[in-house]
Length: 164
Image (cartoon, rainbow, N blue to C red):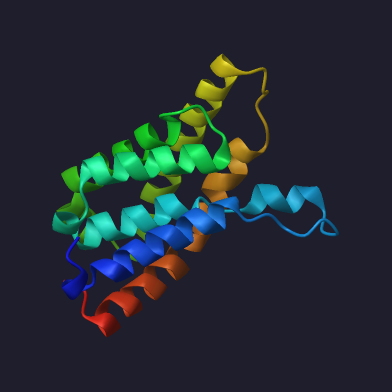
């Protein structure tokens, strides 16, 4: 990423997505609110790949996924595989995805996050005794609902900072 052309903004938003994925609600709040958290990092990666596919590298995203695995104490490689898969799909179809309306993109986001959550649950089921939870269905739904806001905010940042 070239910092002179807005690479610092891309990196900053990716780090913010990692931070939002780790932050927990206060203890006084009900525990079920934690299941209503979107997959922030996946949304941010998806945005940058469809908007500026030449600026995001597959190996960089894979390494970012390894860092997320370390932060979340997930089996090593799980998030790297998920983020690399989303990056590849977005690269493959970025011209078509750009032409979709934000509401159509919400459907794509729902399918991508649902596939990511199913893969995450599968890996965690193999490596530990964790059972399926409601997060498998709530995270894609909440991510889909958050996508228009994330898209518009990042698009405004991209145009305001002239990231190319």
